Image (tube, rainbow, N blue to C red; front, side, top):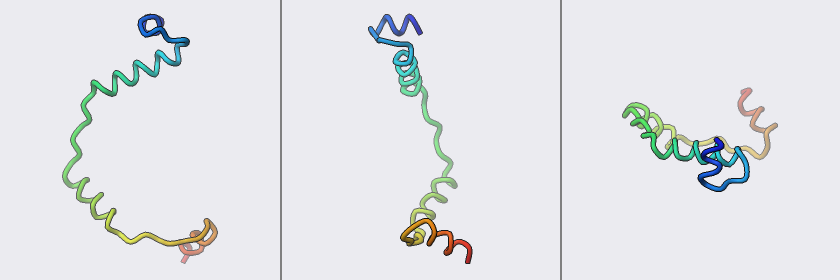
Amino acid sequence: MNVVKAKYGLKDKGQAIQIVVEKYIEEEDEPELRPEFIEKLNKLEKQKGIKFKNINELKKIIER
């Protein structure tokens, strides 16, 4: 971390860790999502939600 810290002129190792993580994420390819999973997400997105005013009302709805 000291090398990264010095290279980028950072103030602390926390910033160096953040840089390393960001670079790692940029370089890694995200795996492709399976078509079945995408289809399931699309179906969930189309479902009607539950309307409630507060958490107590939601609890009552769920308990039914």
